[in-house]
Length: 504
Image (tube, rainbow, N blue to C red; front, side, top):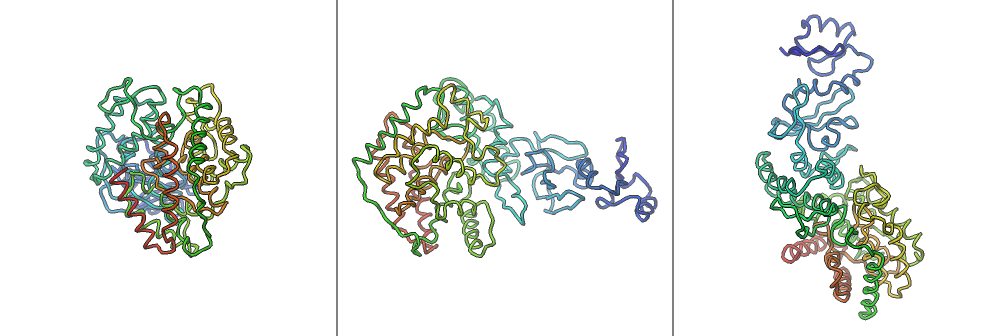
């Protein structure tokens, strides 16, 4: 029999052993107490959910001792919106308590670094939480996915490892393989976890003025060129005081380059059956399935299933949000001729892209959202000012493709938002092309960067001709595929994957 073993008994909560079984039975039959779970009762018959909300650790510590609070529940360290996710070395199950649904999956019990909670539960260590939130999951019947989205996990990492120096980052990176083995996870999780930590924490260190090398030292070495939500390749940094001038020089190169190349317009009729599943491919890349952090196969199947369900009006998934956003997208048209209108549309697109996310900065520029990266702007021009300056310099371009590329470069240079700059740049590029009947451009985003933003990394030696020719080649490649046949679409995607694995 279980007792509270010296703990002062909570007046409204009774465990086996606290009272004789006959007494418990009599009180329950008389309606003086209600059952919360097998063997657990409360005398708060009017609001047992309140008792569960207050005493969930003790209740679940009795029912599921040595379970670990993990997955999505690490955000709050416990229940949120009536849901709690646990891991323990037993069969997966779901427990329904008054006001709380507990989802238990099979996993390791507490390990070194996990934090003991009152009552017999444990809280996953921050690094364990990162690894376990990289496991695949999906939303079911209106409930959130078990694991965090990339946006949510990025916020979690930044919050848990704030102020992390180079030595601490090296320690984290070294701990990933050991923890993966200890938790019994697949080794393919190691590069994904390391990449996510690098993308976020190296960018934070760079913004703080610390060069980083992953041997544990911190000094003036060149930081790793990986995109993080707060900076990265092509982003604003404190080391470039004359941002407006540099931006105008870059856009001038694009204008000159498009003038020299003078590409012919690749016109399409998007009502043709040939283009039926092109938004599927665009959303596939936009959803980050080629971001170097996910297993392509299962997510490809999920995305395909999403499209099929959507055609029957049954799907409401994260992937479908992107699919809907790019399907027939014409928000930014060639008729947008003022920076004020462009900025307003840009914010609206970002808000739609992050719709349903917990990210509170959806639709806000970095210097409006309170993001740490806003400090990189210093006392210089605001994000809105830079966007206005850049937009006004390219709005008069006669070439539709040149204007579209100019907007892409403008967004990629400024990186106006804390998250999803690559995707927003892609949406804007293709919105302009769609509005004039030109073929949209399908290209993958890998490791947070597109093949084009890589060319923008070193702007001192950028070859605008190469950049523009890459766009044209991608546009022609898009036009050659038959997007009516999903089999051919998937084949094209696999070719892209293979090419990027060989020549990233």
